[in-house]
Image 1: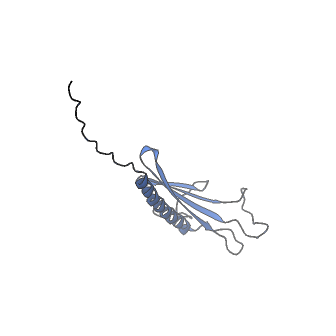
Image 2: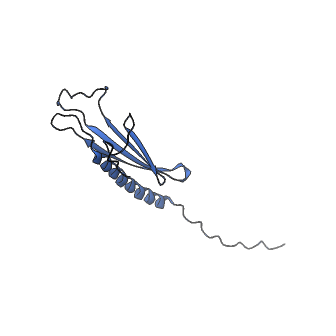
Image 3: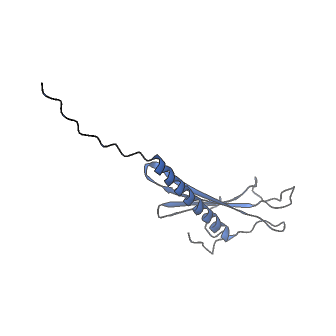
Amino acid sequence: MNIDPTQPWGVAIDYAGRAVVAEDGHTLTIRVHDNSLGYTLERDPVTGQYPPVYVSAELTERGTADVTLRGSGLVTVLGEGGLPVVPDPTAVQRAVAAALADFETRRVAYAALCAVWAPAPPEPTEPTEPAPAP
């Protein structure tokens, strides 16, 4: 995935903080969000800090028979000095790298599971002799 330096988060996201990239049979879904409940960002009354921003990435690959393999990554971006979080273009890269690593871990585990559950080859059958004629 190429990072776009003209975008604050490194990738073009929609009004809801989502982006989808599809390449080579893989789909990468990116989401940038915080945990505030309202439309305005407000400081936490206990800590005095603005809420962190979460950047999540999910990589999916569809296989045969509706099999889907996924990998996910999450990066948390914190505000500093009582200021709101500023966009970090490297956060998307780190979330995607975590999703790729998780995807590979799951792929290896899935391959091992398939090897264990592979059906045994059928036993060779011996030809039967025809019954003697009366």
